[in-house]
Length: 205
Image 1 (cartoon, rainbow, N blue to C red):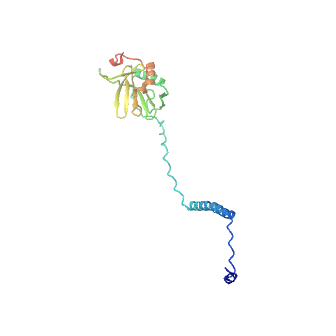
Image 2: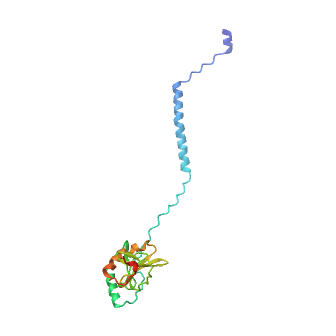
Image 3: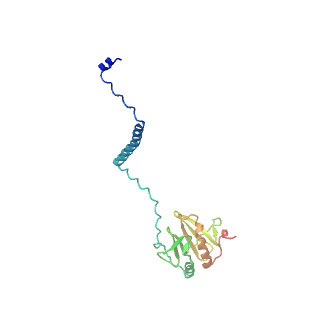
């Protein structure tokens, strides 16, 4: 291009300076830092505006153990002849305070011939009728006392068949293996209620 051509074209445009690498790197770093902060602020704002989560339903608590009654247990107290009355008083005076883990409870009548333990109540009555035991009926000897069992809808009744005065123990079905519940009572019976003859053949040997 000649000098005249350059003059006709007018002054040349100034050249653009090359970008500064340091300035560009600083801008990229600032952008990289600002973006996570912006996202965090947005998340916190949305969280604050979100409705509260409904409270979790309370978990069912374990059922509390049933309170054990200590009220007097209703029992009958039929009149006893003199000798059975003496024997029963001796037995009742020596009975343990507990039968296994069942504490003794008061009775409504005849504390000299009746006793009760636990809830539901395991009961003992002294001086009643001795059951009739057939030659093939089952009997069980527990700690040297021979017992005969009869079944009721809600209990097993165990009655001695080898003693001068009969003793009956009513074991509610709540308590399994009824014979195990008369073990300690059998020891007291041996010590206080004389044995008698004749006794069922199954009680021998």
